[in-house]
Length: 139
Ligand SMILES: [Zn+2]
Image 1 (spheres, protein in one colour):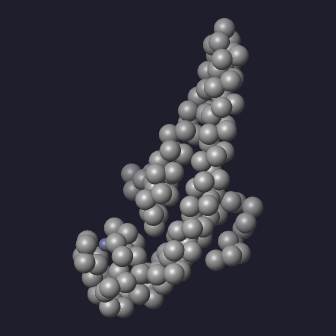
Image 2 (cartoon, helix red, strand yellow):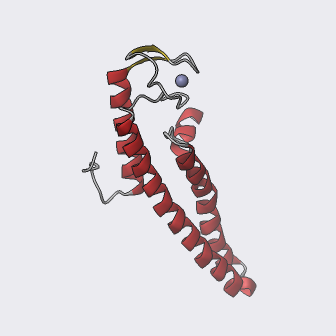
């Protein structure tokens, strides 16, 4: 259960930029909804709370676009390095052979299976962020 929540809120991503943007989204999104509900509960402060809500919609929208771009950039990077990035700790595995253990975390890997793992992961991540692109046509 906790693992599912963790995977939903903080899925494995290839780059630090994506992770930072994702954390910002995880905190900004509930704030956006909270400010909207607060505006209807505390009618005395409706104008201020609606202004906060509209501003937070802008922030969440901006984060959404930035995260989408970061996923695409990460996927391009993964392709460049032939997906040789440890799925557990995101260490570079290019210097390693095509199979063995990650030098940083010790997770066993095979080059062909980690490429499948990363592609499936990015299909899910991109589907989350751009549901209109069913099936991730560009993968
Ligand atoms: Zn590792």
